Image: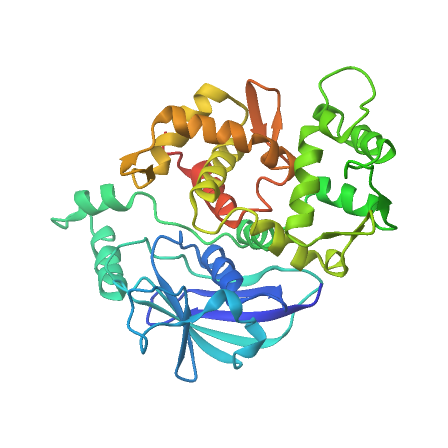
Length: 369
């Protein structure tokens, strides 16, 4: 994987905050935003913008006037920007960062070096952070107890932990996806009903025996529900193509960055299912195996109250029904494993959904339950 080395400096902040990271050369600005968040230590709780040569890039909002609406960052390759550009996070606190391309990166993504801890979210920008540090350095200050309770333990920069988070956020192709794509490499003739042949089904069963609960060889694709779902996913995201009855992997299936990018689009960005899947996977990754009932008790409060249908909020039972319906998709993508009543994070829990990666890290440090 070809990478590019970036130096990110947070402006006007003392002690200074700097990160040097290697990112895939093929990332979009939307993907770079996710990498900057975990590298710096932010929690992606606010709006952001990239700015270069007078052009603004971000998440389009139809409520913005045309002359203020940024270009869609998801459609802009990182390499289109100049060697220096700005990254603004949180329009209220206005954290400004200078991003500089310093050259080619190493063999893979990660955090090369850095210094300085990220300020707490919502502390009031640079002036507020300066005041916070001043108060916390003086236990006799009248605001000390209040701000100490509000801030808790301030973050400390950990290069090794940041390196892991950057690599996890870049993502990896799930092993389940790799298994099926490898089997499709030379083309596979489907059955008259359009399903995978028995030879492929049993090859997958050998690698994923838990996908078929019965203690006997599987016969049809539907015997392995995650495989049937994965077949559908790969075709719909353009990683597999059917021609004259033969299913083959597409050209882009050989590009790991593009494979991960397309799989991430399976859950509509910002949509209900992405939020539900992300939250459930992050909780399991941080807490370990949970009974389905215990998982729902932790997930539902974290979903917030903004999800509804026909003008009413979704009930706990509807959240549970949605998660149960999605379980085959989560298993197909190695996001979920475990038995029917006890679920656990799958091997891709921290490497496929970027927000699950970030949330799992936050929950592991200070779980909200």
